[in-house]
Structures are given as structure tokens and as C-alpha cells.
Length: 90
Image (cartoon, rainbow, N blue to C red; front, side, top):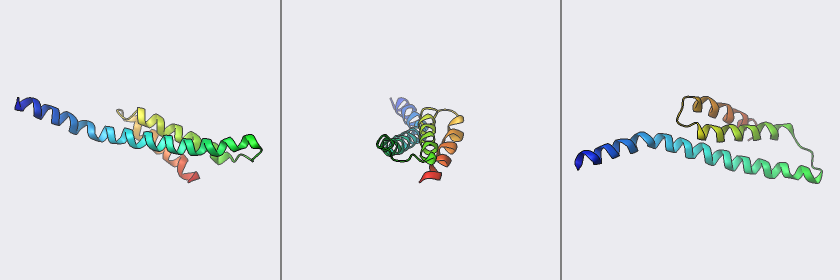
């Protein structure tokens, strides 16, 4: 009985950083993407569309991709690219 509790605890401890990275990148990608899509929707009403908004929207998609790649090494590179593209806007 005690051995099973330790095995479960070690699994939870191993998954905690991955889950935190997944949630952080997912929430950041969704919030910034929604904000940028909201601003881009004003282009329908003849507001000039700035190219930096497009670059930042791509950065939001990179962060969403990093959230779903959070189990691999490619997650760090994808998140870095997405954060750099978003940094230019915010």
C-alpha cells in the first residue's frame, strides 16, 4: 500500500512542471490571441491594420503550439520564438 502511494507521488512530481508549462503557454496563447483577433476585427470597419499585429498573432499561435509540444524538447524553442514575436507587440 505504501509503495503505491510513493509511486503515485513521484508521477505527480514528474508531471507538475510539464503541466505548469502547458497551462502557462496555453493561457498566454489564448489570451493574447483573443486580444489580437479582437483588434484585428476592427479592420472590417476600415481601420488600418498594422503588420505588427499579424506578427504578434503568429506569436500567439506559436505559444499555443508550444503548449501542445510541452512534452518534447522542441517546446522550449517554439515558446521562445512565440514569446519573441509577442514581445515586439506588447
